[in-house]
Image (tube, rainbow, N blue to C red):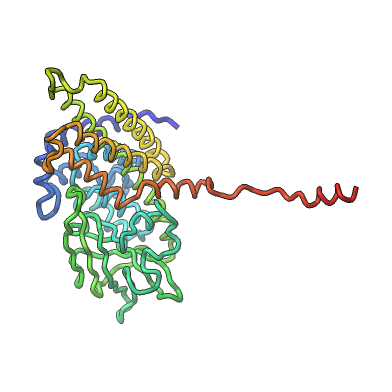
Length: 403
């Protein structure tokens, strides 16, 4: 594996770093998340049309850039540095891979070109607080309990009198669900006897669709409550595809992207803290000159660099995405917590930017973790918990007795 970045990747990162550095200071981020959309629409269009950000991992035949998920992960490291509020993750990391993998040719032709240029945004709606399970990050998604399991609850799908599909149910936590142009909804079909999980496309103007933005811990990662009241929906694909496999594959890539994003946030929180301790003075000297402070910052540096190495490896091998995400979330939580403490009294004020990073770490772990379950499921899949094979000595024992 060649882990060196290409000239094109470096150029995208440099350009993105310059744009976000000018447009995404802490005050601009706070102002953007308090708009109706939850993000700066003008900046989103600039990133979409100038850099083709949402189309990085979309094939060129659909108007995308035709890069790999690794390029998207590297770009998201830059968006993570400034905690950019945007529909990028929900659209490019969750919805686009599912549409690409499961959608019919007409569906891909109708949706992917507009998603690639930012004309449409999309979101994945999974019933209950089970997004990590649906993506097979913290458990096996084959059971289908997270989508309703054929019983009451979750989102249920049935065929209407006109032969089309109708959805009813509620999803409480949908990333960017209040502003998405298209929802990819996981629903349970077939009842208890012939239970199966299918994905459906729901347009923003569908009758019976009710969406409301929710108050969340992390304002930079907006969530919505989506109610489906006998809503007409379009089946994604033909229904014969491996939906659970596609969700698991999407989860691996999304975890790698999230890991890179968390590493970017942790690196920026550490850089801001180092800058502060160099300038802040106590007892006539900069607090960064005290040995105890140096040791704490050195430990954080090691944590962030280790997480960055894991995230880069997962960008090229998404099968390691869950482990990289666990390490990145650990690094972000520790770094943001130390940033609050090392900023002293001002760091403990709710308005300080260090809290944005701490809330991002906590919210991401609630959505995609917890960390110990990410690691436990990865270990289980690797066979680390399998019982050791036993050797049958009965024949040899019999032979010895006979002799």
